[in-house]
Image (cartoon, rainbow, N blue to C red; front, side, top):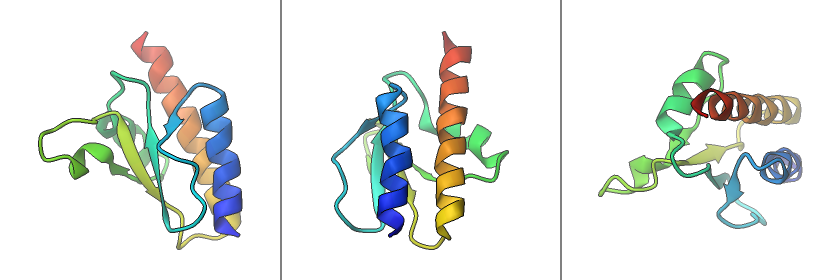
Length: 102
């Protein structure tokens, strides 16, 4: 149930060029997202937290500091309406960050 709604929003982010998916999730609690090269997930996190959206920057999973443009989202503990709103907001934050970075 959660995965279906999360995938719909993630697909919208993907199809609009905001992110790449590590793989199309078929289950589980987390989804791995890759932002365009040069986009700092940590900087996006700061902006997202202002809108009460949190995720784990992917660089935290790479001891050598690579993949700073990746993030992991968890949608296991939220009602469906909040998942949808949160992912939509995250997509808007990323789009705005990209616009300001150009």
